[in-house]
Image (cartoon, rainbow, N blue to C red; front, side):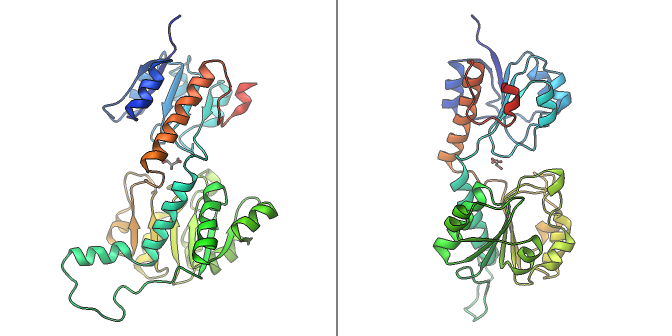
Length: 326
Ligand code: DGY
């Protein structure tokens, strides 16, 4: 019997391609050539499965071009690149990679928080530019991290990881806002107190965004929300571009309406709003929050295991639209 055909839309670890080749005829993109939506639709034709990343949009047009497609395994926990409804009505399963990236992503959220609050990037650029003449009492004085108030918007697994780091490692008071409250047990583990969004904005010294992107969370932080924050506050976005109005944030940073920001994700990335490139008090990184080698390997393997399980007639580990399995 011939093996099912799958597309691996981006370059991944060679070991993962080798694993997939044991089960499938693999059309890979190890050259990592950018695929336009037309290229993607064309490469999906005749495929039963696809391993995708956040860069590939799986929408009605892509699905209609690939009537034999049964599963798209995203190598990401976020899946806003999937039109889940369009997939479900066509009986196409989506899977993602939760859990395996939680701790590395929480580490990185904390790294950005520290870098923004303590002005790590800004002071390094100053030093590299040869501007360091002598010590002064206020040279790159930033905001305190330990003992301050850490706000978290979106309290899923990664938000909880950041809360635990703040509360247990840095003695921070943790407050959070989420669509639903955590159980008492989880609130106690994270030493986190539920507050409304206004209190979160007004009270946080450091506000970390970890909520999923959806039309409802589009510009959850815009000019009005930034105006409610403390002038000394830092804002960290490791969630998704589009949750922050980047133009409004660039202006707020330029005008000193908040002290600093750390951004790993951007509206329309890989493009970055030019206003953000111009202001010194923001740390900018290219969507790397989950990028440690072991974590990226675990994400790739989980995506591969989802394909192997489902196309082998078993149950995938992390389905997004399990109704398709019924
Ligand atoms: C995710 O997993 O959603 C990350 O943003 C991709 O690295």
